[in-house]
Length: 109
Length: 477
Image (tube, rainbow over all chains, first blue to last red; front, side, top):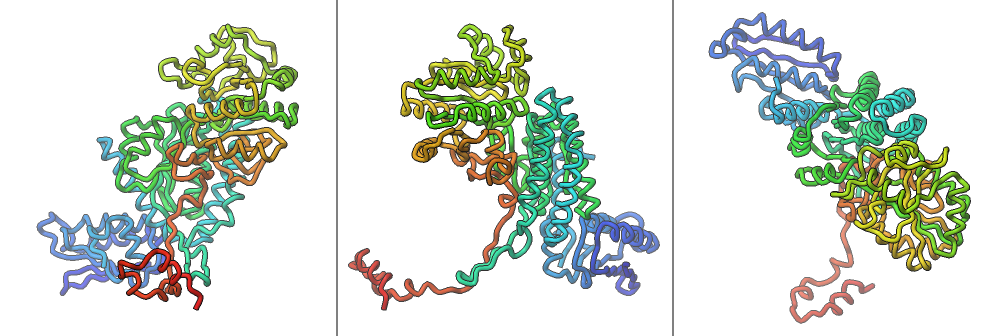
């Protein structure tokens, strides 16, 4: 469903997703991401102690639901500003984030 | 937690915008699947919702509201089901232009107390067909039935794969809250069906709006008409849901020479002509004197109820009250719109005076809406149609059902009737799915050879006359 790797050297949690992130898939993904972030010390504690980053890689994804956008927002809120980004969006996914008005906050590229 | 009006509005619009973001990724098949599911759910709930609406609002007749629900679901669905509303919707190799349909974004739909569940379901269907999330604002006197209609549609939509929050309802919104949403920067369009104040508020919001307000529908019965048919047709329209459709007949205009026949026909078909004293009593309960607007207490009421409120006695089984008036305007309160089974009646000296009266009535608060004519003289039908300012001139047809479309003619079935610039609208059409898309045009290079053939020097030369330029432009080498 979702592949999550934490690179200790880069202090970055990389998440890559399947093609279709509908509401049902997002529910499962939400749980998996929360579980992983809770297990990484650098992603927990007071904001000034959080040193790690989170990157969502959308290379394989061609559809996202509003539930998934909510996951992005919730995940971005767990880390300081600038520590969350979304990469490798195809133009349609980029447009979807743009319409949501959250592309800047979520660092979508 | 959203506390202020602005925060509450932000919450509603943030949900809607996320739904819009998801929805715009759907293809035509996915979209059509959702629309089909929603129409079926709405159609299956037609009776329950009709009864709820009458019980809650105290307006209209439940059996007739069933028909409105059928129009809003089945007929609207049938009219839009094959329409292309996603992606490339046309391609013309001759012009090199391809049209692409894009959704608008969140739509704010205001629904009236007179047709609450039907208007909600119709607006939901045309919004979903165009991949637009919709926020329904229910009239405070029809909050429960409107919310139930929306809930039924929303559950069916979700089941069919629609985005979360693609349908939201504001059931107890204050006027200020409604205005805050109308002016919200994330809103794409307001679909306002209701009174003048509401429609004006929609247009003043700064967001695009399609607002449809009051009508004041004049109906001319020409001497060439089939009188019993015309009267029967008018009765079936004006009594439909106790006259709550804004396209229902308001005034009947005839020539003096046929007045008696028409009066007798109305009476034969169980309508009652009020005496001058009774007219005074009825107008007091029907029209608010200060504003010349209809009293909300008589909207969609039966003749018996109106008679009781006015303190008059009418024959048992009376279908419509008719008030013969001698003029139009403030001095004649019943010349204004009343959505209840009361009709103004005018007798004109001749055809031209009759048409003058129709024009006066048309401009008394109903510009751009609807009008009717019963005639078998095509010249008169066309003359009437050209002098009346109405989006729909329905011929030999009950105006309520005729203007709404889909049953007596091929007009698009709709519960929001565009009134053109007369009604401060951008269109005179019956509003449907096609009005809820942005059409992008991909314009391929197709040189205008005629323009290219004119020399630049000729255009730049001050002495080149229009005749010279026209000659060069149209020259066939």
